[in-house]
Image 1: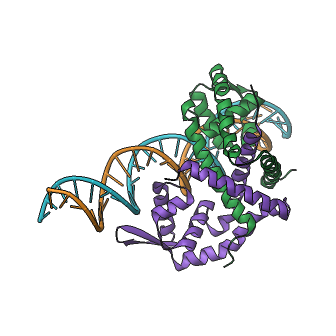
Image 2 (image 1 turned 90 degrees about the vertical axis):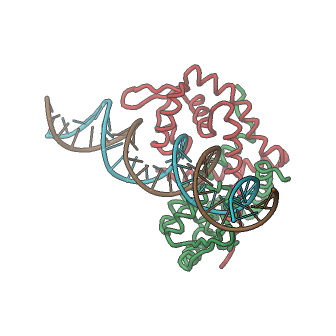
Image 3 (image 1 turned 45 degrees about the vertical axis):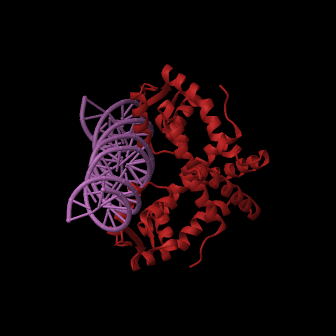
Length: 147
Length: 147
DNA sequence: ATTTATCATTTGCGTAGTAAAGTGATAAAT
DNA sequence: ATTTATCACTTTACTACGCAAATGATAAAT
């Protein structure tokens, strides 16, 4: 049986890396009572609010059902608000949510960066970023082909 | 609020990429009635069998609990066997599992590679692989520090 | 031989994801 | 004005994973 290709090896490594760093990130965010997924969603809201649930779901690559449940939890925690507005619901951060994300963001960004900065040179990080940008774009198009 | 660092941008992109490609991979593997996670586990068993559940869990970065359940499913499907052996359980592929993985592997490796080959040059792929190897190793050590 | 310790595996609970069916609000068609 | 269509969101049923407590299996200590 043919063993591995360069691509498949890289893929496995990347999967393991994101998996591991995601777990570490969850552990890290416990101090704020957040998960990585929730943090991502809050950041998106902070950046793009006001926006609808579907737009949000699209941004973080989750189904609307998943987004609905996640937002219900965040709303229960008092971090976000949903207002029925015309026929859609408009999402925004509450003061508490705003404060939470402002506190957590610097730590979390620093934490995410540390995975790279601790092992790669500045040059390598730039290269990696360029490559990932290409790859991400490609996979996004593959998932939802442009009209 | 300070926005993003190079590292945090790269992290997001990598998360999105692995997420998207993982979903595509799950879709792809439906024809074999497998998920990406199951495929990974079967490959590991094929390569390292016989081994225990804990060793396997370690290899694929899953908790022992998760591994226990996943193997229960694979056993029910008739793809693997678990034998109580001393105080541990020893895992191996059944004939059916062996056949399944042999059939699926070439397609799946090709599919994984396609994410990279369709957008990167040979040179870029080598670079990416080198970088991911460093990163993966680092995050693994961060998660379970060597004694 | 019973207790204790240790290690591997399983199980209960919570979060998160999907797919598909269901609900509510608004616009268009009759 | 009622029906119909459509869109946005919710809910349900399912799979999956992590964490941590429980269980089981074996060895060591008394």
